[in-house]
Amino acid sequence: MEHDLVVFVPGFLGSRLTRDGRDGRDGRDVWDVWGECGTALLGSPPSARALEDMALPPGLGDEPPEHRFPLAADELLMVPDSMPGLLSCMGYADIRAALGNPVDGQYVPFPYDWRLSNRLIAKQLRTRVQRELGRWHEQVDTHYPDRPDDPKVMLVCHSTGGLVGRYYLDCLGGRETARTLVTLGTPHQGMAQAVRLLTGHAVGDDGDLGKDTRALNEVLRDFALNLPSVAQMLPVYDAVRVEGKSRLRTVADRRYPVPGLPTALVADAFSLHRELSEAREAHRTAETGSRPAYQVYCVGSFAHPTVRTVGLSSDGLSFSAQSDAFLGAGDGTVPRESALADPALLDRSVMLWTDHRNADMASARALGEWLTDIRRGLPVSGHLAGDEHITLHAPSEAVAGRPFEVSVLGINIQGRNLRAVMWRVGSPTKYPVEFARNGAGRFRAELVGQPGKWVMEAKVEGPMYADRKVVTVYMA
Image 1 (cartoon, helix red, strand yellow):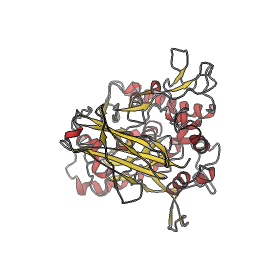
Image 2 (cartoon, one colour):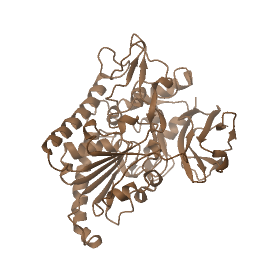
Image 3 (cartoon, one colour):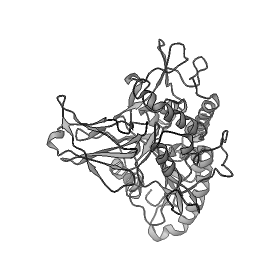
Image 4 (spheres, one colour):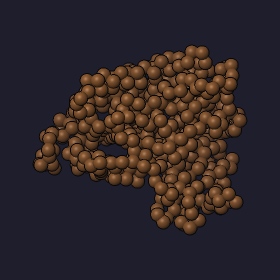
């Protein structure tokens, strides 16, 4: 309801990680660790040293890091960012507007260390919500004197933040004070791209960028292997294609284990999802004949090609080159079916479809009036946008100095004043991108980028619509 406490849980990459009191490499008092480490990784031939300040010790599991490893999460991410080969996030500069502009004291952002286990972060969320809900109980009369009942909690979770929210609600008692859970592009059943990252195949196809990606993939793999949150993104659906076999398999299939994927990481991912499913089923059984403790809404997309599966050779000993056969419908990061919280929720969850990418799904333009209606207790229904939307196609990664293609697809683009710009993350300077129409009716441009994280944005009018994507450019 409109008087409930609104708690926003960001996803992986969605919080700024800092070391307070230590000067960063640029002399700032607060060291934005991932920002500087990520830049260092891209601006020179890939090296493990670039990410050493972000690293965690092996075997951390669900425990908090100690000694030199802890980082502080001081605020939500406000600018676009990405982790090469995994996902990107456009930041949450307009998240309060997307949430329907809750009054002062009613909105609680929950930044956290996105490297750590979702179980650990869920415990931290429980502590924060208990404190903030108690505070809001003392303030709510000022803003909602005619409310029908005492305030509860509305959790809005982007991307992997949805796993944190679900664990808090169903495994740590949060459902007792919750009214609503909204997940935005959450990989409820995991995502295949995590397999590629953890096996050293994240960036580029095996026949595409070739040797230029080898060093970067090795650095990213070694880094990600010790991040509990990445392991917990592994798919629990059938995500493995074996050449010559008609049936898809899971990454836990012992007959065809994925080469280079540690069994301990697979076990942790399946254990997390089993805990969620068992807890949810226990609660569902207890709620038979009564109203569920809280309402679930899942926002997802199937408008963008998304890595749904990985391929193995017929003997299972090596990866198959990535191809269109491994793609499916989704939001560019999370496959369509993984955006649904749980098959058991089909009778009580509302699936809302947007045509935005995962990285941009927590924006006001992506959510429209949905969250305002949900907060007011009004009926909501979701569907993809009509023919007016456009899609910007660009590679997630590119090599500095080497041309790459960007294109825009949509209905009647030529008559809708297509405009496009690109800018380096952190820089105010925007550069125009000129698109030319080819014989197939596609508007395309060929670009060459310098090392860094670049945002591409295309806009049309009649009606106004935009699409954005982060392109990470690295040194070969």
